[in-house]
Amino acid sequence: MYEEAFRNKLASLRKKKGVSAREMSLTLGQSESYINRIEKGKMLPSMALFFKICEYFEITPEEYFAK
Image (tube, rainbow, N blue to C red):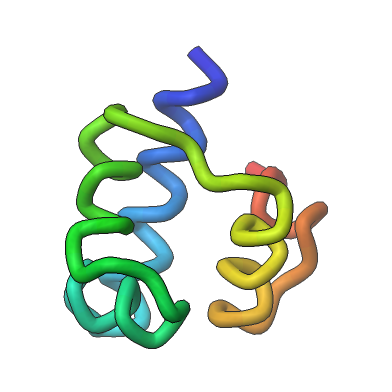
């Protein structure tokens, strides 16, 4: 349940920003399929990468989980 909400939020924020999963992955210094694997439910980011994701979207962790 929480993992699905996490994935959906990530995809929503990424699309709102107008970037591809590949572009975002590379900007974060990860392999080009990194964000795609998260959005497909194959993995979750580490805490360190989660904080980088929040920085990427210019939001706080609290805002990421806000409805």
